[in-house]
Image (cartoon, rainbow, N blue to C red; front, side, top):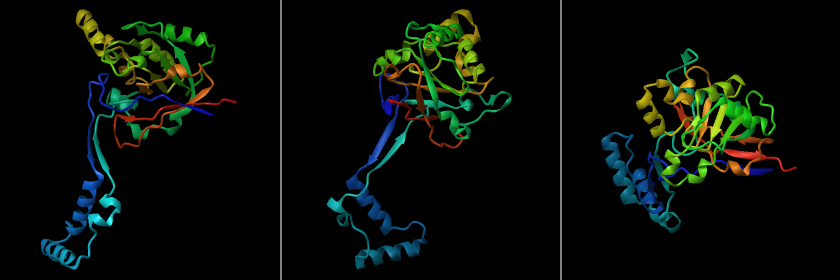
Length: 275
């Protein structure tokens, strides 16, 4: 079996307007901090803390940094970032508070069966920057394979935009799905739609510029807002779709079990049977 990595790196990049912050407690500092923590037990009353501290210091009955190999303990990274950086899955609650008239589900509420399934790749590389990908476009791409779409298949939209990853143009230059495309997929029983662009909709500045000219609210984030009407999820910022066949493979994109959150980072991979 061949495994193809479909994920981009979670990192600060010209392609990401959002930023990640990382602080590392190093092996050297970790040894000192851990040993200090053993000396000073904050759960005890103050008098007991002081007496216990003095006893440990004068008796030598405590763990010292030099007790670790090379005086080094374990590192510890603390990371701050949004749930929408890197390759990730949007949950219904991201689109709005209600879905199908009920409280929208968060990422931890979604069935695991959705995230490991047969997949199909639809070639939409001919769509230009700012173009809408319509239901007709999807039907034509499907007919070109050919492949019979089934419920719960993961549909991957291949635009080739991931080749701009690492540049500012990745965020600004891409096509995106319109309402008709999403509605058509959901009516086929599709629960996960993936794409190799920054988001499922067209770039932000393109949508906003058109809205300011027309004042038509249907222009703004139609793929996302359709998720208020029918439950489905986005798999965004995929990569390496050119390494996949059109069909005959599976995708694994399990989200992290984050309580109540609107999205999760995933390590999306394709599994191709080479027999």
